[in-house]
Amino acid sequence: MKQLKAGIKKDSIELFKTYRIYIFALGFFLFAVLDPLMMFLLPRMMEALGLNLSIFELAARLQSMALSSYAGDCTQTGMLAMLLAMLSAAGGDQKKQSCVIPLCAGMKRETYIYSKFIVYPVTAGACGFFGYWLAYLVSFFLFEVKVPLGEAAMLALALAAFSIFVCSVMLFLGCSTGKAGISAVILFFALTIVGSVLTMLERNQYNPLALQSILTGVSSPIDLPNYLTGLLTALILWPLLALAAAQIFKRKKII
Amino acid sequence: MIQIENLRKTYSGRPVLNGLTMDVKDGEVYGLIGRNGAGKSTTMNILCGLLKRDGGTVLINGKDPAGGEQVPVGYLPESPALYEYMTGYEYLSYIAASAGYTGDLKKRTGELLELVDLTGAAGQRIKGYSRGMKQRIGMAAALYSGHNLVVLDEPTSALDPQGRAEIMEIILRLRQMGKTVLLSTHILSDVERVADRVGILNGGLIQEQDSIGNLLKRYADPIISFEAACDQPGLCEKLKKLPFCQNVSQNGPYYFVWYTGDQNDANRALFQFLNEKHILVNRYQLHMATLEQVYLKIIGQR
Image (cartoon, rainbow over all chains, first blue to last red; front, side, top):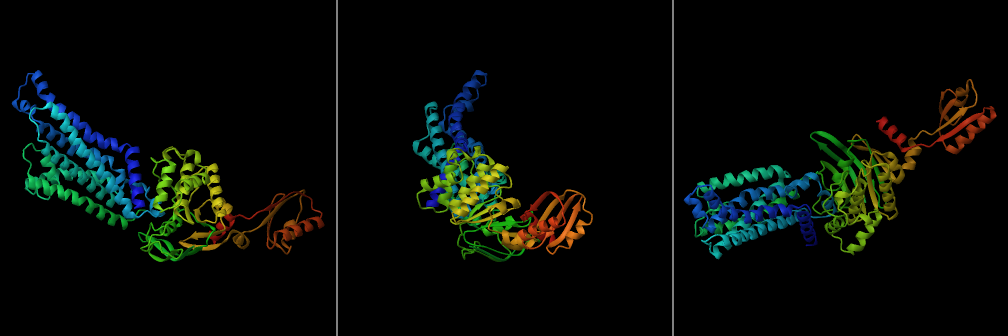
């Protein structure tokens, strides 16, 4: 337990002192302010340019459109920023061999991995959750047709779970292979491609990637079976991926 | 403390360790010397449980580092990768927790920082440290973790003379504290200064393992050189007939005498001979044998 606490402290120091926390926050919170503003201002800008499209007029009134746009940016650009910020934590330290001294000192290999699986996904989840609420708050004052509070809470949880899932997969791939850069690239494209393929095949139950389409959709009410099973799978996979990564790391050659 | 028997390791079919056998006793500084690529780092990595061996036995205090039970070792790699975003104090605290240290953390960290002369830089980020300072904080970390065993892989190879001297000073302090230190290096003057015993690694084997004094006695060729004041025809032949003399060479007025037996006896006998023959000497020098001579002789023999 003492080792885990020390590991969490070390990873938290890393998160703050290497400014990764700001990249996380930037990915989630910047869009939370910019997207609703853009959705609000776009029809007015179009109008000023002499373009009067009804779709923009509609978008200017719907809070759900602003939130959907925010979720889309978060699950694409925000995730990419997050993955890049995690390169060093997810395998980069193995490559640099900075884990050698603590491991020789007696730090258990599984504990070394678990602390990462606590600090990074929790941070990603918190950024997703509060980022969504910030976007909700900003858009609440700008749009006429509001999203119900309960639905917003569900979607905030979905973004948190999706962020935790992506973060966990990144840590798993990076820590298991020791190749963080390649893992990030593969994961980013896999998120888009696999997610789209599974949606096309209507395999949305127990599929954490389906949370992405739920988040970016504007339909109400939310598809509850897909939402719940996707959310649960994402959250269950988190500790499972941590366990698997720890077992692989235990058998891994570091030098 | 450390017992290694018949250790074997191969990289992609190329044998690096061919049945290495060595032992390090409690409280001694053991210098593992050998050329680059001789297998020093491989031996240390196996010892620290970072590499798997192909065969042989490795025991640290009776425990196998490759076994299920973790054997903590205070290890300082050649180029230690540290968490550079941390301060020296934060880093040592993290290593202390990794090592399961249960005592007064603040006091112990303070002592270690003092030992490695980094008290004033404890609050600075490691990123801003010089190479020597990084090496020293790495040594402090190794002391936290190693309990009594500290394994140092070429700790001075990338340092300037001042940095090297500082590290050697710390190793001498560790010896005084009764720590067991396994030190690998190819800088033989460093080993000569601090090691109680040395092991010469060549061809994947320990070719010789003994105290420096014994190795010098067994292998070094002691030389006395002098400059004769005037030309002495046939002096070389006369010197060669002396009982202690092994060999003589001449370069102008300079004579080099390789002798056997006790240095004082040889010295006295040579002086007596020169005196009897009324040979005037301008300069006279006793050449101390070095570990480098021993090392080159052993490596050259194989």
